[in-house]
Length: 353
Image (cartoon, rainbow, N blue to C red; front, top):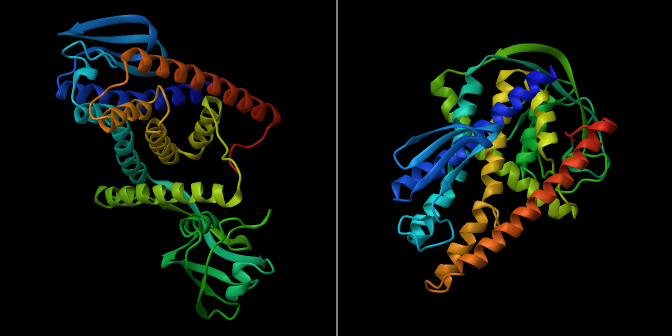
């Protein structure tokens, strides 16, 4: 099984990086930048085929790919990236992340079209924490949560999802009491709940459990994938805000963590694996736009700096040195994160809270 997970991990990572570099390749060609090499995998090179001025290569290390553009820092070459206008460079530099942000719609659409088994039942409140938003709203043990903000909830995962979409905001919850009568209450899920408590302050259980097969036709899967993508941005926004509210640093993971999560998603089924790949692609899109040296976002910073200085550029040598130092720092950080991930695996700790 571990061999299968390794292959799937490499295929997903390769697809995400290939799509990212394809964005740079297409936009570079559109604005007249010379593409010296478009490679699948990383060197050493297995073989290459030259078509026109570009070498298309297949390389030995199967961890994605690369797009080598002429003169990324040096504007002296007439067809280099650095010789183009600021707008053209921003177009090329941001295109990789744009492609990674669009890919999830395709992956999620396919995922929603694949039938999957979903465990559903009655979501019951087992316990309400004193002085919690749930207690203040009048929720009690034995209440069944039916809807949150008008959306039906069929299992605990859907309750957690809807709650985290509404952190810090007024949330409308429809419940059925012990007498079977429906009532509607309002509460505000907490950004920073006490240890061991959730945003609402309830302990839940799922009763009368059964499984349903769930899938959507194409014309329903496309808008559902788009809305899921929007909600994912909202969840990311809320997660970042909760870091500040808690005063805690976020948990990070490297290749080992991604590999372990890939294996867990694969065991859950192809639909969940495609959803995981979609969210990983979105994560890659966002990270690459961080204003850090060696990343696309770091190069974009130099373009904005040039615009702010009314066309006066940072010298190519200085910019290249900054990106080199940044690359070394990123590699060092990745080694540290990988070491921590390996320790997690050895201890048997879960990567999912």
